[in-house]
Length: 469
Image (cartoon, rainbow, N blue to C red):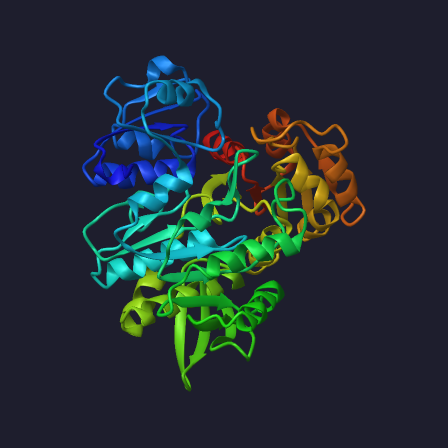
């Protein structure tokens, strides 16, 4: 069965960021798309409404249209009644990872992987290729991309830029890392970290998954690797020992990088850096903050240059790039308090985001509201979270945003994380999420910066705070 030949496709769990992006991509292909999901509001809600996709509430079998030719399901709902109904009716059933691989199979795939930075880097690549009039398609797991107004698009160009996820396809059912279904021509790896202790026992298992993905590249493929990551360096050494034949280009702040960032300055709400490559230097200006975004931009330039895009075009596109939803996003202000939001949910991401905030907001007081995501990650990386959060002036930790894929672990909680963080930063406290807004309203003052962090629904607190001003 090839989903490319099927017209009517139902997306079960359509509101997830990856599912939404893929549904829009399929709709652009001319397919008839329907969907179902829980009633809860997601970050993708607005973009789905704009596309007028018929979405039913709930995951009952009655919501699957009778003329459905294939059902694509989210790993967040791997055993729902719609899947059982489709199987009973002999309707082909595909996981998100399988559907992504099939729907993009006729494109030359640029896949961006890594723990942090993959969404923004993928969006930057798509933006540059669009600026260069190369008509890129893309499937990127964010609520929205400012350059396009959608997180997923299909057009007739040669390339598809996709976000490649190392998490398993369906926990306890299909343990294949999602990205192993893809057959990319170019891979970008932003870093490698131990991020999913529920499916990878340790860092070595995580690195092995990434190395298997890199070996999917053809002999004439390209691996663009962030050499600042020690784990990426280790993976590259292992690949050489296996006689890896694809071209490797490195980037980063390291002088050993093929494309190295020589200096970086934050001025007038711009990030300016100098990039050295092939014996020359180029100035790059970004409208978004962070050393990590400078690195993301250089990775995007490497890919674009490989595909024949002039450096001038890449630099223009990157300066115009305004980011993606939930990635260092300004929400607004409340009585002189700046309110921002970011998806950071791993200690390394939090550390990079807060370091960028320190530079971007200079000496302003930084108040962070962090919503931990998954019991297993919070427990395994507890001390790392505590140290990363201590870069703020004040930290509020809420209850853990649980994943549907795991059971509650009573030995770990948001309160435990707040107590551990307080060992590094005294002004750290646990507050239940429904009480956070009132606390922020009464405790912050003009000139402060509030930043909500996490992969769950904590962004709603930021939106409510701005809306109440």
